[in-house]
Structure formats: structure tokens, C-alpha cells
Length: 553
Picture 1: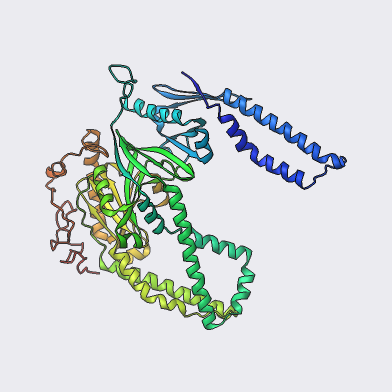
Picture 2: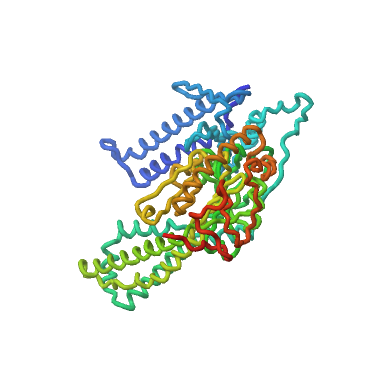
């Protein structure tokens, strides 16, 4: 049966589309606008034109809402729309991933919402209903899930009207955790925006001010500016996080995750298990220091409930929680077990050190050039003070980098300031890419990228084993391709998948003689547990501290 938009859509759409016109007319009337040849009668003419425009707008929106209809059938979503020209759309249900619901403050007061039908095909919303009642949006969300699961309509075949998938709350963000999320959030876009503003609006003023400073005064002003910039980044990041994740709640309902969040803009959406490509645990030095982390879920080309109302590629399933809680949820979604990362060979650490020291040298050279060519009283030597930081950062980059092959998943870890641990089920792998740039080839290093169908792969954010030894990269590629084949067979047979009870991991690999016990504590066992042929002599073995042993250049 075809349904219509909410009657309250008319006043809201009129307000939404006509607010700009009202502001322009008010400005013209207050400013004493005179039309040529009319003189003092100009304001009256403007007011008359405004009333005429308002009447046309109201009439159009009434006609639009009355001529808009939709129906959700067993096979498709059918939409009829258009005032002057009619448009009919029939969207197969198999293309629709889920229904997202968003409501701003005014929409919540009116009891209406935007229902967005999203697909896994990319960043565009397939269809939107602007606007239906919130209850109707929730009904569409439930109905889509029921139809995709193939369940009978409530009331049929003995089904009670209240029947439905069992719902279990997995996580709810309380006020203290929301405060911690804000305290540990920093918006790194603020420095860039400030730089653009200064360079475009006041570069000459800033340059003149800097030229008046000398020595200690310049250093003091620079220090105060950096502190102010850091404070502004923290305040903006904290405010954005609190607004975005206010009253966050995550539940498991049948074969999907459902969430609610948002203060000014309220989002209510779902993440189907069969669309999940990668789980990502993300942290930064502050979160690591206090034992917190964030869990992101990347889906097939789409992420529910982006802050801009569009697809973003990944969604924070848990915005912040103690790391142990994050790991427990990961185990509930994708049983990974204990992970023992294999780090890159130690020669990769020397590569990082050279890279960061070159950055320091380039900064010093740039300041020296500015001092000589522009006669600015800017000392060239302060970047040299960052040399010890470059040494530490090179070691930290190496220490936080690694990969691991489990029985059913590949796990990679990269990053220091934003460390990401990516968990990819073998059956989600699309392509395994072995890349080696000119600098890596000099040191016999390579990067093995695990490409999935997630949209973040388009921006180079796939899971990757970075700077592994060349021979190890060859083994990784071959082993990943072999395990992908076995995992796809198991997935098609219904034996594995996110949200399903996995078979015994040892059973899935016993036929290949690869069932092994892993422990998350470093051991002195030097066997390469991920190689199909046992130990790999070309890969640095682990010492008793879990670090890479000596490797031959």
C-alpha cells in the first residue's frame, strides 16, 4: 500500500527553503530599498513580491508532498514523485543495505525525520524520504530488516505482532565516558584552517609583526602561539566529539548492529553484519596512556550515519571505551584470539630515522633561506632541537608497526600519533598487493596491502604489512591467497562470517598441518607461525623480548 510524506513536511520544507528569501526581503525593507522608477513605493512592492513568492512556495510544497508516494514491497522500494514532471523509481531490495534515520533539533520537536535508503555502491544515498514521522521511519527500518531476512509479516504463520529479532545492548556511553572522549579529542584541522586564514587575510600584518620581534621575544611569542593553537584544537575537538556522540548506544538486533547518537543532529541507523569488511581499533598517545581506544567498523562502500548525513566509509561502533571492553566486543563480532605481532626488520627502523632527520634538516634549511633571502629575524636553528624527537619517533614507528596471520583473520598495526589495528577476515580479501618503491628496494623491503571492498580502500587506508622483508612479502602474498580460498569456501558453506558462530579454528587448518597455539606474550620461539612451510629463514626471528632479532642486510 502506497504511503505519503508527513503533513508536517509542508511547514518544515517551506521554512527550510524560504528562510533565505525571508532574510533577503527583510534586509531590503530595513535598508530602505527603492526600485528604479517607483521611489518610496519600493518597500511595498518588495513586500508584495515577497508575499507572492511565499504563496508560490507554499503551493509548490503542498503539491510536492501530496504527489509524493512510496511503497515498500517484498521485492522493491517504489517511489513516485514530481509536481511538473513525474518520476517513478523502483529500487530492488537486494541493493538496499539499510535505512538510516536522522533528525535535527527542529525535526525532533515536530516529530519528523529523514529516512535514507543506503546502498553498498558508494558515497551516494540511493533514496531519501523528506520527511516522514519518526514512527514511520522506524517502521521502514524494521520492515526492511524483516524483508531482507525473509521473515513472515507479523500476524502471519503464527507470528505475534510483537515478534522480531532479539535485541541485546552491547554498549552505552555514559556521561563520564563522554567527558573522557571530549578530553582526549583533538581536532587537527584547526592548525590548517588557522594557517589558511592567516595566509589569506593577514599575512602582511603577521610578517610585519614578526619582523619587529627579536631573539627571546620571538621565541616567547612563538611558544604562546603554539600553546594557544593546541588549546584551540583541543576545545574544538572536544566540543565536536561531545555533540556527535552524545547519548551513544549500540545494540545487536538479529544479524545487524543498531546505534543511536547525536545531540544537535540525532542519528539512528544500522550496520549489517554481512556488509562489514574491516574492524579497526584506533588510539593515540593520550588514549594509550590512560588505557582507552576507539572501535571503527568499515562496511562495503558505505558507513551508516556519517556526521554529514552521507557515507564516510567507516563508522565508530564504540567512540571510546577501556581497551579491554573494545577487545571483548571485537571477540564477540569476530573471534580473533590472542595476537602476536611480527615487527618489520630492524633495518626499517634506520630508514625511518633517516626520513625524520631529513625533515628536520629541510625545516632548518627553509628557515635559513627565509632569513637570508627575506631578511626576517627568524632563527634557523630551532628545528635542530627536534633531532632527539626524530630519533624517538623513528623507534616508535618501528615498535608500533607489525602484522599477524591468524587462523581466520589477518591483523595489521601501523601508526604512532594515530595507531590503527586493522582486523580483516580472510573471506573479505579482494586483492593482495605487493608494492616496493625505490627506497624499499634498496633495503630489500616491501609493503603487502590487503585490499577489501570497503570504501576506505579508495583512499589507501587498507590494512597493510609495511616494510616487511622482501622474502617475507613473497610468503605473505602466497599464504594470504591460499587462506583466502579456504575461507571463501567456508563462508559459502555457512561455517564462518561476522555474527555467526565460527567453527573451531584449529579444525579449519588441521588438514594443512597449520593448527598452532598463539599467545599474546612474547616468546623465544623463532618459528614463523604464518608461513605454510614452517620457519622462514629470511625473516628476523623473535628474541626473548619479542623484538626482531638480527637481520642480514
